[in-house]
Picture 1 (cartoon, rainbow, N blue to C red):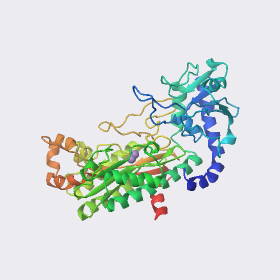
Picture 2: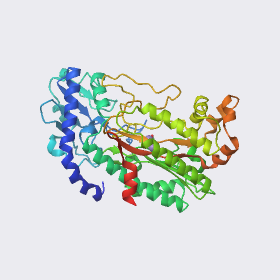
Picture 3: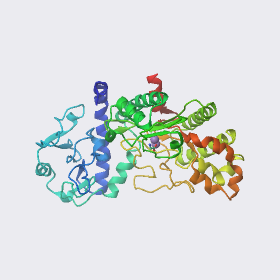
Length: 449
Ligand code: GLY
Ligand code: MN
Ligand code: MN
């Protein structure tokens, strides 16, 4: 973490106490429902490469990160007993192969009873003696510490914790604002590199330098897509060569601060005015959808409303003809926009609980014909979610329209015009409020300009 972010840690410290109170009360409730006395939240361990002895980048258990911003602390545990100060069993081995975690330090430490453990046995020694009264939360693979706890990730408790995580605390919102600002710094550097004619690989490097992340620290693999690559929804190949001609640039890239993510997409034209006009239209459509975000709205309705708006954009851009209902019903809008409108965002880029109706885990399915929608809940205050409509030329999907009624709705010559540009996606991170919303992404772009 660079100096800029450490300075801001002072402000985070003032919010952290309330955050930890909220986390504690969620666990009180989860433990009570699960009929257990202690929660042991295991941070996780790096996974070993197959048939080798080196480790893949460590990703901490998001439940653990919800307690403390310790993104790089494997083999450690938080032991929580309602009414008591949470114990952080902090694994700090004597290790000459790797850099061991440093001395616990930061705004969060005073909220824990920190116990340093030098060996796996030391870690185990700090767990409650009566393991039958414990639940463990985490991933337990072959390399994991054997905590001796039988009840692992019980659904009763986990559903409660996941459902609650939809709404962010003030601390989490503050951290996510920082993650947005960090991501935007990368986006600005990437756009500059694109304008300079750099390759995807070099644009990626410019991004990573600006956000001060190595690849493993990015919340997800950067999508840095020039020209037709913009039509591959999760394009992460990073071509080393510059294309002969630069027509368009789609970048979907985020950053993290204290384990919380931003998830931002922008699309740029290299000079083509018609493509630029379509990008501008997608921005105005996206802002219109963002303007509908508020507490009480069913996100499924927003997704369907987006398809209607997109139908109008397709007609205006002469990519399709017909009324919105026909374009939706014949699958034309889905062929151009085959992914969901967005998802919850937080510790995980696709944060948990997006399909939960309640803390019992009742599932709300996506609307029929829209299987990839990751958020189907009614929006609540302080949820943070993405709004990320797109419009792409994906021949695999458009070809399926041929031979049906849908074929006649598509203006195939305009599709041929758009194909070399790949596609457009505009993605902002938005906080739900009562009757209004906060756009973390646009605020961060405004602050940077
Ligand atoms: N970057 C992945 C997503 O936008 O969902
Ligand atoms: Mn997203
Ligand atoms: Mn994204």
